[in-house]
Length: 284
Image (cartoon, rainbow, N blue to C red; front, side, top):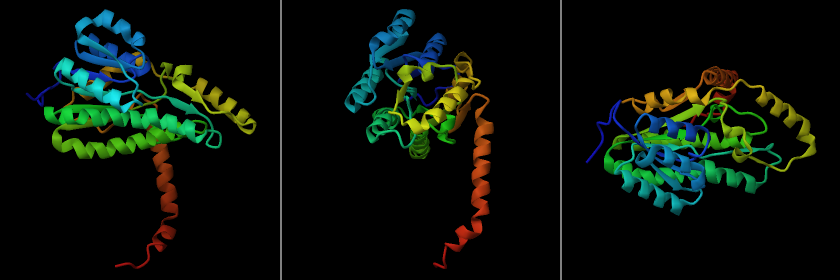
């Protein structure tokens, strides 16, 4: 039985990682409120137990640490067996590493990529055989404006999102023939718990950068942040669309930032174009 004709208004089955807080929680709640079914996962069941109390049989709560590939496979299979299908797979689990490029240890960076990249990959690789069999499905990956631009102090987080973007862009091309869609959700700054201690890890600091980091923290604190409660309808428009975008800016601040970043890149490439061309040689 396929669900290729699932269209706007059809009830969907979601699989969501990182459903305990932030966007994962907001979107799980919103999907359940509109009558969809959700397999909500988090590292501790207690953090999502209230979803079960509130939404009953429409929600399946599962403990999942995305850095454990065997557990990912098991939990994805359990969710699929429970609901009979998965329509929307939302890779939302992630955190930010705070530290200058010089400060973070290789272990800090590996741990970041274990969650932000390898965790997402484990979910993707576990769901693809099931979605292919269905002949339909929509993979949503939560990236960031920082998948296109960068900031100091959280450069490694930015790097994880640049990798995330490339993986999903390639994935979209690879799975299109099977009727599977891919969308990268790119939020700007939002008033979620992403800035909380649970969503940040700190590299050991060097004194020389202390002032710079203090200024950066102040700047972030004063950044205007979007309202997470305003986001679900936009997300629903994407999952209900027959032709969803590969990339979607969440919020109004992203496009001007990305536009400026690409304009600057193009200007520099063009300024150096003659030097670039001179390095081509005359190969036939």
